[in-house]
Length: 212
Image (tube, rainbow, N blue to C red; front, side, top):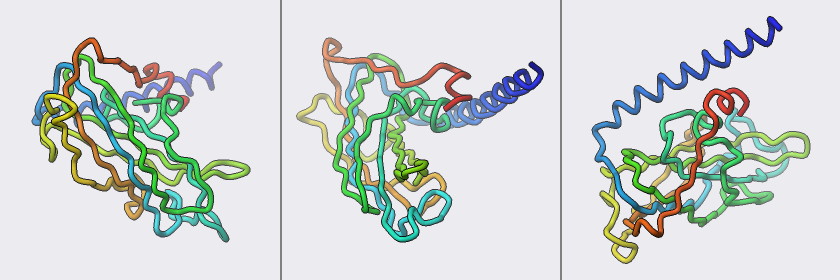
């Protein structure tokens, strides 16, 4: 019973500390334009770039072969500054956008969509996670945060889809290994309220943060 109590207390403390960092960043983000109303976000994940065939520990994916990457992604509008996993969007809610074998830097070219239905936001995090499939245990290649704001290259959401312009392609560095990158572009545009499809991506506070 004592061990369980200590474990729970440690989990609560870690979750609280993570939340403090996110709140500090949230305050800094107040300089970004407020995005409100009903609009659709489209993020194109173009490519995973891992020229050295390494994982996030800087060790090779495989001693003799190339990486076997599975890439998942999600558009996070709820907790863009929180840590990966249960503190933000639990991995069970992510979409698999690529599954490959014997390839280090695959072309992906997958578009994700997320609607914002009336909520006021200042930042969007297009989260990407690459894992190296293994017979025994999958290894993390890296996590990537690709931030979008109204101060970005395409400005605020366009009036409609026909007027929406894609941003220039840009890269997001790996969280642990800066030589690993993903190539991304995005566009966003206003939509009628009747077409808006709300999607909840965040998990259960504290519980998901401890066990994800």
